[in-house]
Image 1 (tube, rainbow over the protein chains, first blue to last red):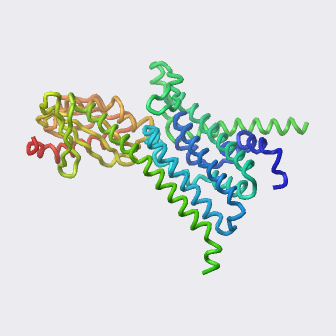
Image 2 (image 1 turned 45 degrees about the vertical axis):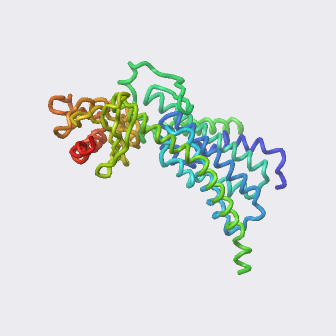
Image 3 (image 1 turned 90 degrees about the vertical axis):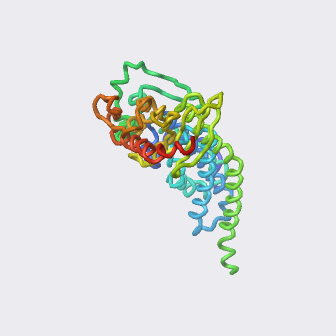
Length: 217
Length: 185
């Protein structure tokens, strides 16, 4: 807790850029591959994961002096499962259509390793401010990565871009019907997820490599 | 015993607190979730049966059957909620029957997790092909252009199995529910 001050913003920024959970750490691949067929699904999944991350880091950080080391995983799992169930219920009550599309992937946030990883690496050792900065950073990083994939796949696969909005989803982009025969069906299918993820990670790695090289020179 | 409490009081306490939170969320939200499901079902019934102003729920052969009446109280048709296996997981749909039970008046898939972009087209425009088909003989799925005279529908390209599963559910309703409708008329 010595260097708790001053680096909260850095902790937040790392989650989004330097240490992005999906594009750099390659964690949370299950929702990344499964629900990024549309931007709407990606954003809602990102929001749900961010909520659970924040609540889990909050509870873990507050109880960090009480948690006995050998039962910590049990406490994490208990906390995560509770908030995932709450998120699932809230989605079902307020965004029924989207929650039907996400299906089992909302309950599956329980086993998303990003969340337990942040509790173990950051929240159990650090104060509230730093743990929250970390949770928001990682949550935003996860949401951003999923949204990039979702946007690419939805445009190429379905020719549209849709923002979530409860009963009235907002169409951002709708390519003309003439596009329909040329839609890449593969982009909305699982292989499309792998292809897009591979390309995006490749680009991110290229940028990081350049930065490292540039810094050394 | 003392050691047990020392080691586990936090887990026990958290268990109780979290259980209370979940119970609270469940009680506040469950009414709204049921309302959502009910509204989706009612909308589906309105789409598959023309002129519905009042419905009466009956059970035939384990199926939920909605006897639909129009504004004048005349029987305007039947809506049957049916589910069966799909390509990925269970498909639940509502199929509309004409008052005499002879024709399909509409079909709406209300729950499915078929492949996005392929199989999940069953929830859209595709289902309107069933409208007007006869219940007298089994509906068939064709990969090519369908022949309505032979009671056929055209499968979704790339999702023949999803198309077949939907048709199986409809044919099952035709076999099991339709013969018993007369008793409830």
